[in-house]
Image 1 (cartoon, rainbow, N blue to C red):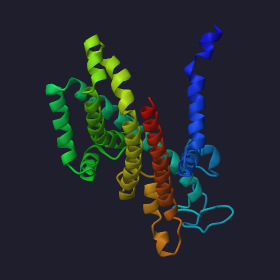
Image 2 (image 1 turned 180 degrees about the vertical axis):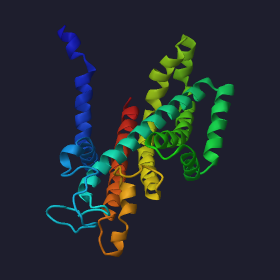
Image 3 (image 1 turned 120 degrees about the vertical axis):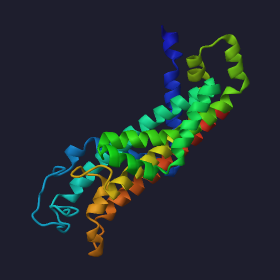
Image 4 (image 1 turned 30 degrees about the vertical axis):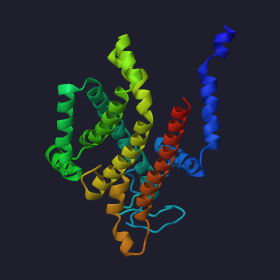
Length: 291
């Protein structure tokens, strides 16, 4: 019994992770702190925000910063600081769910196309080429104008379009692994398709997929904010950083930087995620080289 506990790989892996965290560059550590802070704010937004997301707290639109309203009020007299906090929950959650759906679709079809090849690979690739031929913004605006600018439609449309990029990365990476000797040997042993994917292909393309996951999240996050800024993304009265910039843009002409705070929040999270993803990619590549 004691030998089985001591032979468990979990403590060793955990210690390796802690060691790598200590050795991580300063930029990666800063990025982790920022991402963790954003995640906590998004999770506990109702507990952190002093006022409700839709609550009108002042009769004065665009009220000044004060001890009562830390960032003033918006065009309807709602507390800007509270809506900024709720905007973190809405913006990040929509981008996160969209990225997960896109990543699942793109990786599944990309790896399957590389493993099976032939006619199925040609069909998947031609469909992806046709979808990528149309600019994303035009495609999204066209679909949203037909089906309506609801959050489920927004998530589904962006996820499908984003999955085409992930499909190409996953397919190209999987094709490089499928042609290697150890995969051919597994074929000869009679291993099943799913075993090959889980044990041979996926571990070897994981660093590339991790990097692409972070980059796609940033792309989706910025796309949601841009669409909301244009008025076709997350619709009012739901707080969203892109729409908050548009709704309060008049303050910039008055010398007030309040509308720039949501824009700075978007930029800060994007930079922080890139720092963390770069470190994770280098770490995964180093582990593969050691193996």
